Every structure is written in structure tokens, then in C-alpha cells.
Image (cartoon, rainbow, N blue to C red; front, side, top):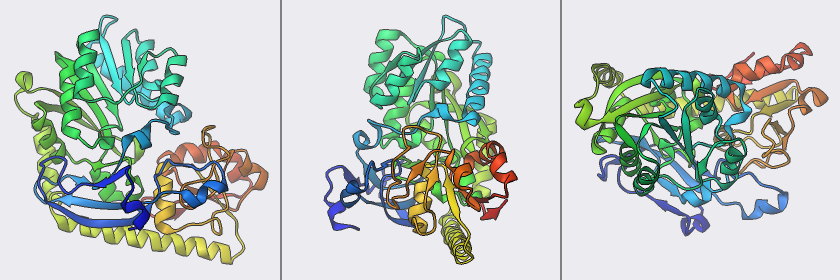
Length: 420
């Protein structure tokens, strides 16, 4: 550990499991000291003061929750946020289908309220508005909350927890649905968050939460989804345990392809539903049969991660020796975990391009790779394009048809290093 970081007032290390509270955490994947994945730098003058924190991945031997014990103050992580959902075609299509599915399932009308926690720029809630449903967003990032309001989505600019939920319900009444996409993993006190979700819905309401699925991380070696914002990596078994502690029961679980494979959990009041659905119980048993509740499965993942790093570095080193040029696509948080773990510097990857205007002109954390506009690709025509935002790989390759027509090739690092 960097001794300067060990004394940082914004960092601490948990000794107990977030789900069961026991001292039962066992390390299986140390990813080294890493910068915060979304802490892009404005200029080279900032490089010297950049902060690095341990990034370890552990397994709870009692309740099977996979998590990182290294906790950075959420005020540092989320008050000014550079990821916005509105820049991706894939996310836009996903959101439209998502809103329609929830509206149909719950028979939502103009009298019903949908609350989204970590609502970002309001892209999903706008889809509900188009279907005639009342909405309210809650997001701690001041800059993206302002974007949402500018787009007509009422947004409360604060962190969500049980206390906030009680206040919102007292002011607005019960919600028919509370939605949280890629936020439960960001919360250190997951039980308090879920109790807040239960508090804010009516008896006939549902808590609908989408999060990356541990099964996909294991099966596809998606180690780059591990970074300081993502404190937990959920299986159905661990979600059942967490919901039980919050007075919720899972009534439906969907597996959706977004972000490399995600779960969409539907949970309701235990007083109404009594137990988890048969579908959920069967899924949990299937996970056990695949080793999700045994430490040995995570040792296998660690070996796969090491092989992935070796394969990618061998490819990039060979291409450089052959005089080939390589650029990156997607200044994504997951990409920064990969870049820092593999130690991919500007010597191998001189620049990355991105569509997000908030990141242009900045430098990636840790490896300090410049972020340039997407138009740079056709201006410079690198021989290869390393797609760091591989979860949008198909969209990116489709958009870059001209680059490909000129002879450009794509490198996908996950699940296996592949040249297209």
C-alpha cells in the first residue's frame, strides 16, 4: 500500500461483510493500488498529486457476497460525476424497453409515481414521462442532477438512504416503483439502502434494481468491472440474503444483456409476498451447483484474470514491435481498471477517444492517456482500436464502419482477447 494513501481521510478498509456483518472476508483477487476509475485529470500538473488506493476483491465465506473492502468517501466519488447515460445508443434503447416493461407490468398510469435512485441525467425517467407516468429522480451528483432538471426531470440532489426515503415518502406519498440502476453496488450500507427502498413503495409497489451479475463476471472474466465505485458483485444467493435483512422478498429475476450481463431484480414487501419466488429459489440452487458459494471458484477467476492480462500485453507489445499503431475507444471506468492493472501506458496506447464531452481534453487516471474526440480516429487512422468500453462493442464497431473500411481492426479485451 502507498503509505500516503493509507492515511487518507477519504479512505478506510472494512473488516466485516456488508451482508452478514461477520469477519469472514477472504482475499482472492488483488488488483494493486489503483486511482479512482472516474478521477480524470485536467492537466499534467495534476499527475504528481494523484491518489491511489488498494483495490482488493474478497469473498464472504458465510453468505457468499463478493465485495471490495476498500471504501472511498462517496462525497469524493459521486458529488461531481463524469459518466452520463445519455451518450449511448445502446443505453437509450435499453431505457425505452425498460420503461415500457415496468409500465405494462405494474399497469402504471398518470396517477402513479416512479422514483429512480441514482437517476443520473434523467434519461430513463424521461422514457417513463413519455408514457404518461409521474417521475422523481434522486442523485447526489450536482452536475448531472442539473442536467436532468434542464431536461425536464425533477431531481432531488442528495444521497439516498433510509432517512431520505422516509422524508421523500412523507412529502410525495408512496411510489408504485422505486428503480435503481447500477447503484446498489455503489452503496457501502446496502441494508440501509434496501430498507429505504422498502420504505418508499406502497404495499402493491416493487423495488426494481438492475446491477451487473456476478455470474457474468465469473464466466466472462470481466475483472475490469471491479473498481472503487463498485463495492459489491451480486449473485442471486447474496441478493436473497440482503433482501431478507431489509424485509423484502424477490418476486422476479431477469437476466438482461446490458453492461456485459446484468440482473434485474423485482422485490416487494415480505408482508405481501411471504417468500422469494420459485424461479428465484431455483436460480439460487443452480448457482450453488456451479460453485458460486465456494471459494475455489474465485481462485479459478484470479488465474483467468492473470492469463487475460498476459495475453493482452503480449499482443500490444508485438504490435508495437511490428510498427503498428493502436488507439483506445471509450474512456470508461472499467477501461481504467484494465489499463492500470495491465500497466498499459502511452507507449503502447498513445490516446483514447470518447463521445462524452465531459471527458474530452482530460487524461485517464493512473496511466495518464489523453482523451480525444472520436473524429480523431479517421484523422489519424490507427491500425488497431482497443475497445475499452467492450460492453458497447457492437455499437462502436457499427459506428466506426468507415474506420474499418479503411483497413482498421478492432481488439476486444473481454471475455477473451480477440482481434476483429
